[in-house]
Image (cartoon, rainbow, N blue to C red; front, side, top):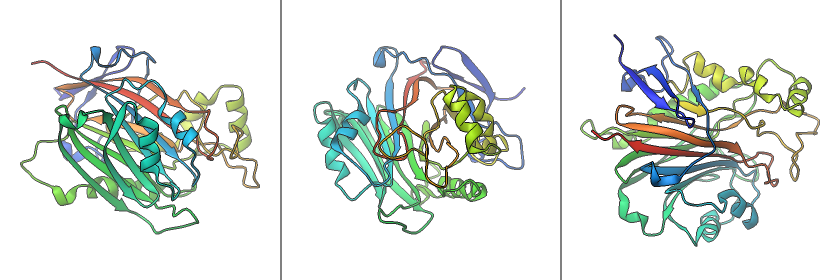
Amino acid sequence: MGNFNTIQAGNGRRFKYERKPAADSFNNPTGTHEGIKTVGADNLCDFSRNSDLCICIITWNMNGQVSYEDLVELVGSNRRFDLLVVGLQEVPRDNLTRLLQDALTETHGLLGKAILQSLQLYVFGPKNSDLFIKELKVDKHSVGGCGGMFRRKKGAVAIRINYKGFRMVFITCHLSAHARNVEERNTQCRHISHSLFSKYWNPYARPTHITIWLGDLNYRLRGVNTHPARNLIQRNLHRLLTSKDQLLQEAERGQIFNGYCEGTLTFKPTYKYNIGSSNYDTSYKVRVPSWTDRILFKIEDPDNISASLHCYESIDDIHSSDHKPVRAHLCFKISKS
């Protein structure tokens, strides 16, 4: 008999999958692999009444532009979640920390941040929630040099936190661009996974409960041209394009994100838009629309923790970047022994 675990989707269904050793948790190119498990979101949440921890997670490639109004739209008005995790790429030189704090000042305060030039990660909690923190560490890993006016740094930054007894790692990344660089992105994912917090490694430390990756992973659509792809999107048939998604394909090959979960891609591809609009790229490159911006999660201790996904969506009313932000809402519950 194998060692099996389950994860609960937002609609209450439970998915069964075989558990792998911890050392095999990110990629397993030579053995069996699980790929990325797609789970549905129910778009309903009573927040903490039936959960021990609810987290809102947002990723956005800002393309070097920012306005306070966009950040207010980004964080939203419904803030009954416990934690807000915001991962940003191509951040301009403006003081994002101050602007985000101003946007959240009535409900949440900054618990921690990790910054690698234009790559930034923030964790906010309700007022006085720092009382629930037992540990907070940050780390970063660079995979490239600077480029462009806005210091478009590639790599990852991470925050490890013990909050309300949940030991979690949040990682936001910006990987190499262009459809042809699939193997380069795969390698970057593996290097980031193996290097982050390695300097803190302690064989006697208690393992992480939850790992969440968010960011501009830059995986594109493969095997479809831009006009057929856009035609399907225009007809609201973009679900037919998920089989062309490089991230899902590479995970299925066992190269990356072994055993991770992601919500169903019901929203339109988030890149590349004409700035100031919701129209896809009309430059001379006429890029193929792609789901470059993603949020993935893994329950490292599924025997004791269950997860429910209540939202996985793009924020289409923000037009200042060539990317649309993506938001997920995850709730966790500790099993009572």
